[in-house]
Length: 134
Figure 1 (cartoon, rainbow, N blue to C red):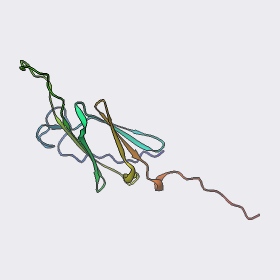
Figure 2: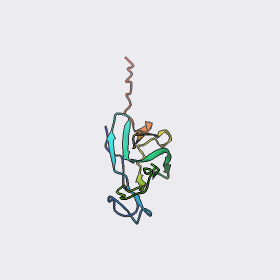
Figure 3: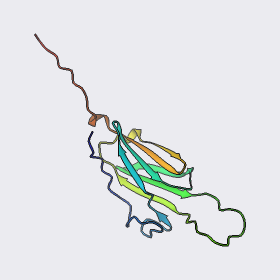
Figure 4: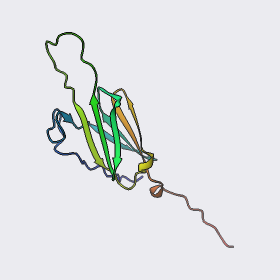
């Protein structure tokens, strides 16, 4: 297996917890993990409080963009203390040509966005049959 997937950050500014002025007003870059499999890569992004209808995953010109809006409703009643940060999430990464962009898929479960980045067919190992003219 090759480990040549390019996941260079494309978003502006440093990744840090809390507010990131360069990414957007009140936006943070979600923490991500990327694991290589036999068929490609799995990217997991931590996006608590984001619903399926409030997440957006796009690929354009070799750049994977993930964004999401925190939509969980605060508890009813008069707030006497607020410790929850309700951020918008934004992150973008460059993809290498080893990824089959037409077959990328995504799933959101319990606040974790999982994106399947399949290996392009041209980069997969292929067994070649050897013939003989004896």
